[in-house]
Length: 547
Image: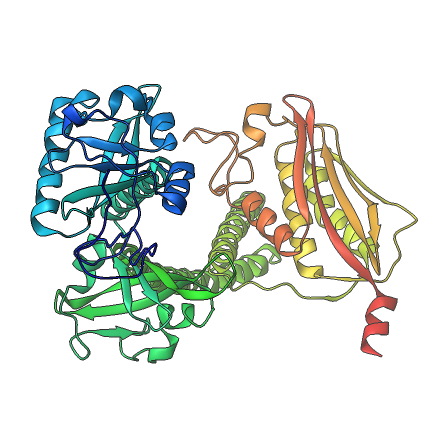
């Protein structure tokens, strides 16, 4: 019967150090543990006086054990038996090789020898099989103790850390995944703490900023590439103040990018589960290629606008140069026709006059088209009378229609008032173009011009004008493209009818400028219905606004 104690004099029954203490020797006195092994195993026989110590160790839910200097177990508690499936009666006096793989037993024995030699507490993670043979992770604390005879023993306690180890493994895997993602993201990612200290950055950030970008070696500028951003207005500085930043453009110049690059920066505050601000993170995207394309497009746009302006000016000048002599030709021809010419001379002069009119019409169409292309044609709002417009249109067609023996008539719904407000000149221009085309493509029959109310709106109405003829009609396949510039139903060189294909395109653009709509309904060989709708205000509406 022996007692475990430290050779120094201490008060009986006191545990001087805890199991996890760091002193070189655990001081246990006047506490004895009864051995359950035979003396022939060379195991220390423990006395019956173990009291509180035995109760604590035996009832502890964590596996506890004591070994001698040869590594033989002299004590294990119930938890050790339960967790590792060990029978205490047959196990006492055996070493780790009795229940652990050879390599593991060799490793644990080496640790025991080192502890006996150094007299220092040791803690190590071990993978040990449980009672079901399943490996689990354990944190094993081992420490030297001395019995009453001065012999050194080894005490130990093992904690199951499998769950904690699994969580650590999951965190490690998540960390590796996060690192993998960050390392492979092409955009720079930077995170800082609440004081602005650097927490995290990926290779793309290193490539952008470098590792030695101390203050003064780089610059962050506004998109003008000259004005520096104030320090407190930078994305990360705003993020650590709790502000969210989206797509902020910065011009960055560093030793690695002396020519400068443009980046789009987005920053987000970093908050913990309680909502407390812990820092900020920013993602930067190099948009230099996009900005270069945008700048190139702006240059191209400016060049195109300049070219369009030059073209418009050229067409306007040419039109003016053509219209001036053409007006002279028309004026002189009119005087010539009034001089009582011979029949043959009269016919030739008439041909000259009609040809000059057609040429003047083409010049006017080119000028209108050029002005529409350049956006220089504007819509006016002046008083107009639709009945007068229709009567003038019929009157202008009466003589050429009589030559072709074609009847022209007009009608207007009674709901349309006499006094409306709109662009009188442009409405007349569209009506004239539609009726002229109807007369051109109609060999017999009649032409009808009709105006009706399509629908009302506050302060006015949408008036629909329809020009119907009994001419050649338009094939269905060509109707969708009929209002495009330079498009005609018959575009061949040997076509019967003249024109350059701009009239309907000009009409469409004029109607769109007046916020209206335009279209055609036609059957080849049976005639066509060309129509357009424009919004017109009533005079009372205009007067009310003026007052």
